[in-house]
Image 1: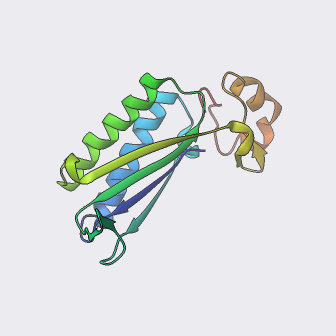
Image 2: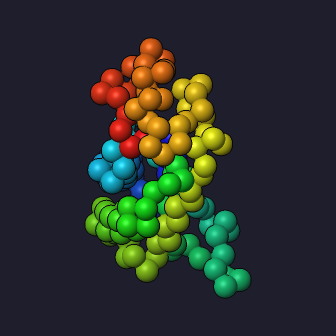
Image 3: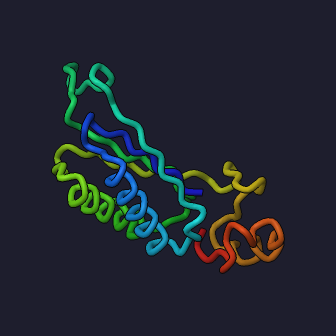
Length: 147
């Protein structure tokens, strides 16, 4: 379920860097939440000149990562994800953290559908997976732990 959107300043993201960032965001999210890797989505867009303004002035140096994640994560988990994404982004792109904004938005599970199924509430993952095993076995062959 988690959807991470990466909007980058022009020239920041090569295809190689996009792949590395997608792998890092997936790893970070899975390690922090125990979600199946196959449920982590990462989308990239470049911010061409004239699309980002800061303090009323055009800014072509800033990048953003926004993520929709299932509600119910502890503050510790959320802040771990924020810090690790920031560190990875700066390491991989060379862009300093001062030119990056990251925001995670919690979304109630009852408002999320993936693979044609409404996601479970936190703590209900195992029962949900058992109930929908046939539909999910291809997406998450090892089951779901912290979706």
